[in-house]
Length: 67
Image (cartoon, rainbow, N blue to C red; front, top):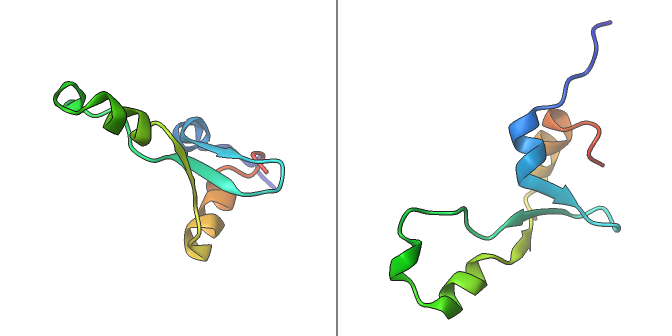
């Protein structure tokens, strides 16, 4: 049986909370950030939970040691 490997770019983009929820940033660092208001930029820096069961299953496959 070969080793299970972590998809490193996925591991850097997602986190898991203590209760087991998968979180991602609301928006990536885009190239148009300077045109937005500071309030909008702060709102985009928040973390959002992933709700779709299919996405969660794919994350568990890509990052097996994150949870």
